[in-house]
Length: 152
Image 1 (tube, rainbow, N blue to C red):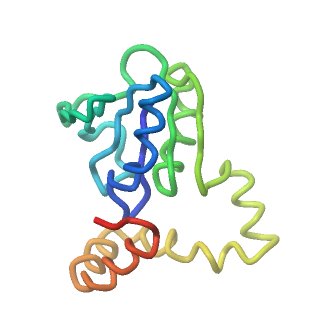
Image 2 (cartoon, rainbow, N blue to C red; image 1 turned 120 degrees about the vertical axis):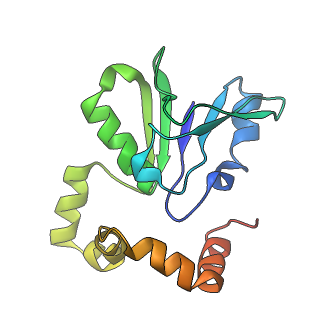
């Protein structure tokens, strides 16, 4: 099971989920890069039920080999949807958390208050903006992450 985190979360956002998946018999591969939109071609950490973690080559993909269960949250879900559209043979299942299919999302932008709630998606399309904000406002970033449930 490949788990792609959101932005600006880290792989720790899956820490409460992976023990249950391991208990159910799944092996998990967790994204380790905050740069989720560039996954899955970036490095990932593989976690087994034993809790051991190992990083794969930055040039390898967790989606090479047999089809996987792909789970994405936030930006990770956007990557997951794109993977399903472009390379469906790589997936056994797709689970998108917090991000609907792109057609449903676009419809909601025009018919609800979703555009106001998704302002950050447009902001982070500016290449330097996210890095600058995270670097200049570390306390606010930390508070944002803690408020989203990340404790470390």
